[in-house]
Image (cartoon, rainbow, N blue to C red; front, side, top):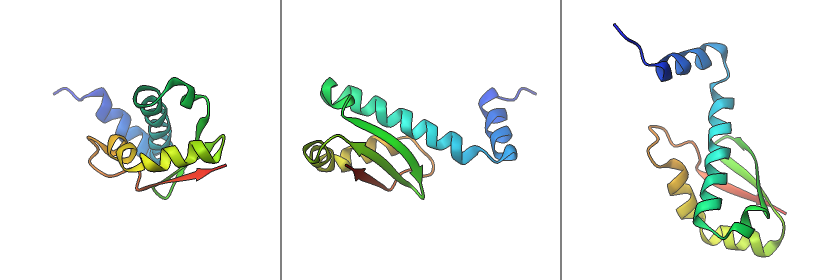
Length: 97
């Protein structure tokens, strides 16, 4: 019988108690990819995902204009972040200046 490596990694991270941290890193990396591909390249340098806590992704924005632009697209960003996930990792995005 063969076991997938991804299943072993999932089991190992849960056993070690670091599955939440691994999920947070995945979400932060996915957010960066979304910003890079869906928005202008200059926006990538003005936004920095900080951390994921209680299904809220906290993002630092360079200015109120950048935060407002992202707020307008928040629903789309959330859909892309949660797409294909069995459990929703992000419910809201919090924008900090």
